Amino acid sequence: MKIQTGNPARGSDFFNRKNLIQKAWDLIESGSHILIAAPRRVGKTSLMYFLLDHPKKNYLFLYLITESVNNENEFFRRVVNKVLKTDFIQASQKVMAFLEKIVPTIKKVGPSGVEFGVNEEHNYREMLGKILASPSERKKLIIMLDEFPETLENIIEDEGAGAGKHFLQSNRELRQEAEISDQVQFIYTGSIGLENVVSQLNAVNTIDDLVRLKIPPLTNNQAGNMINLLLENVDFDLSDHLIEYILEKIEWLIPFYIQLVIQELKYLYRDEATADISEETVDQAFRGMLEQRQHFEHWHTRLRASFKGKDYSFVKNLLNIAAETGFISSNEIYDLAVKYEKEDSFKTFVGALIYDGYINNHDDPGKYRYNSPILRMWWRQNVAN
Ligand SMILES: Nc1ncnc2c1ncn2[C@@H]1O[C@H](COP(=O)(O)OP(=O)(O)OP(=O)(O)O)[C@@H](O)[C@H]1O
Ligand SMILES: [Mg+2]
Image (cartoon, rainbow, N blue to C red; front, side, top):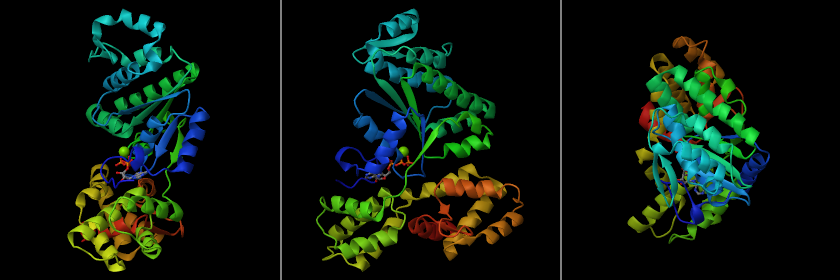
């Protein structure tokens, strides 16, 4: 397993999370439409790639990332084009007969199949419904949509909340039609919480049929195994004691942080000609990791984009206090809410911070702490001070 800190982990670089994958399959096989709900960088896309690359018999997966799309028709055009490229469709007489009727807008018929150009007069959502209703093989098609909440946000930004709700509604109707055909399921995810965006629109009913799949952090045991696999491809070794030391420091054991630490240690070992890795080297690696702004900046940018004015001041100060003192109590949160006149809405904001992976109150319901001491340290150095 090679170190991978930028792209999703794939193939032999993917640390096999058997329980998580089993859980995903349980949901898929029960016929559910799924929302993968997890904070940034936790491994959502990697999980989708794994499913894509390892379908069970009689399942066909399709992966689509729609980050830059900003209107509904364009979104469905992309999905139509993707679906048309699968063998789910290609052998279907029924679909081909249907497509022939709209042949003038077909852009390309080549080895990879049929593709539609942009034609605003087409209702691609309707077309997709028809295509999905007439599959050719006895296979189930699982359509995975990555960065879906970003598409929703784009639509809201460019065309307003009404268009956003319509988009959600269209997707819901499509799922219901898909249920009738009984051969198509959807999996949604994205780097921002769909539930947060949807609840701001007061449109929770449009996604209440989606079953949540959470991605938990690794257990201590899994994280240790993952480190050992990464060590197979570097020049240094780590004692069990040092591995334990690293895991304690990371605390929130998501694969990404493990990758970052091992990568930093690799650089230190090579560049500084460090003879042996010690606790001091590990400490130094953590410091080096925090200097890489690109890995953490998005946590701040995201808040800046989704909270304005006093809302932003409230969440930022809350996180500042938690970063400085290690936690923030419910009372302190309430005092802050009073200060920024957010008594009515602060619970939703705290909920969003929990959902997006900044803080939790697992140990003590009255105290909120950072999920990750690494993010806490970064925040303290770069945002709070
Ligand atoms: N199963 C895994 N095995 C190894 N590394 C992983 C795994 N899952 C996640 N990672 C690490 O975490 C990083 C982020 O993974 P991924 O892109 O899948 O997360 P994401 O949740 O889709 O992130 P984003 O919210 O930014 O889209 C990867 O670059 C890799 O370093
Ligand atoms: Mg992703």
